[in-house]
Structures are given as structure tokens and as C-alpha cells.
Length: 137
Image (cartoon, rainbow, N blue to C red; front, side, top):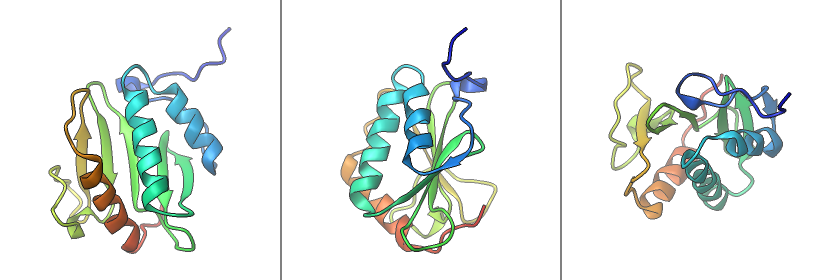
């Protein structure tokens, strides 16, 4: 019997909810194929852009929150062909992330295997998002 996490639809790892870096690292380690490198890239960019960032896994997705603030500013989730990065107050970011949501404040960035989004642009969005009020979940 394997101790590897079960992969849900789209290849999203099923990770028990928990606070801190440990559950997030377990999620990243369980991301399938090329998506694992995306998870590592995002986690590193977030840690660099947001000193003292808070982390958790909820609903089988990593969540990030600004230190000393309530709520969360972003999350990501494995889909079949991409990793969906959600900025919970993304409608306030400049420039706007390209993916629209049914929720007026949320914006998405879908990261594909051959993604060309620059680290500088991602870091800018991450910093901006962390400065906005966190969303309680």
C-alpha cells in the first residue's frame, strides 16, 4: 500500500487540511509531473515577495496569507492541463490577471506547462495581492 496522496480530478493532490509550511510542502511534493515545478516556483516567489507569509492547505489547495493579517490573498489548484492561481482580490491588481471569475473580486491566472509569465510579473501580483485585505475562508 502506498503512502502517496491520492490524486483527485485533474490530478489535484488530496492533502489533509492543516496550517503551516508542512502541509503546503506535502501538497507541492504530490503535484503530478511538470506541475510540481510550478508549485515550487510559486511557493518560492511568494516566500520572497511576502516576508513571514502564512501558509495552509484547505480544500486540497495551498493558501497564502500576509503575516499579521487575517484571511488569505491567493491559492492554487491543479487542473487537468494547468495550475489555476487564484488572486482573491485580483480585480484590484495592476495589470489585471487575465482570468475572470463569477466572483467580482477574484481573478485567475492559468499556468500551463509552457507558460511564459515572467517571475517579475508574478512577484508584482503577489506583492500587490498581499497588501490588500485578506479574504476569510
